[in-house]
Length: 142
Image 1 (tube, rainbow, N blue to C red):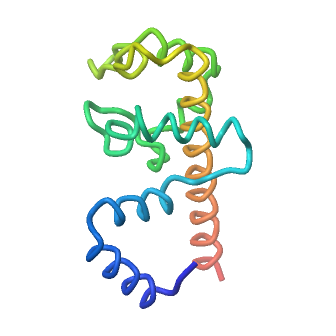
Image 2 (tube, rainbow, N blue to C red):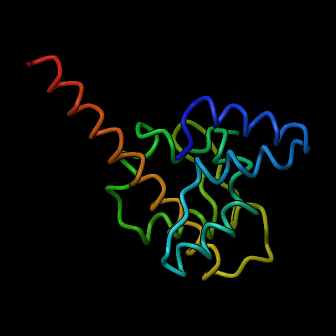
């Protein structure tokens, strides 16, 4: 990964090329890639269909980069997450997940691949958060 100075220069250069290039760089850094073909396919589906809400918390959509949004969800049976994504869901706080993310053209398998990517991403950020807490606790006890 580039050091902060080089990263700033790269972002400035990309900004001059246009906002789409900057957006792609930010997405590449924030939204992990995987060598697993199913996760990679899910990532593409997620970016095209889910990121606009789940990337920013629109309509209370749980953001995978926020561990507090996902702690209890990752402990649920994945079939329940699939069901909510495929059929839609209204949460106890009246947050709403539209069926198939509002894209009726997605088949069940595509929705499941997107859910698999989102849980992969959320799991990564959960683990990162836990490691950061451990490092912080270790540094305060030494």
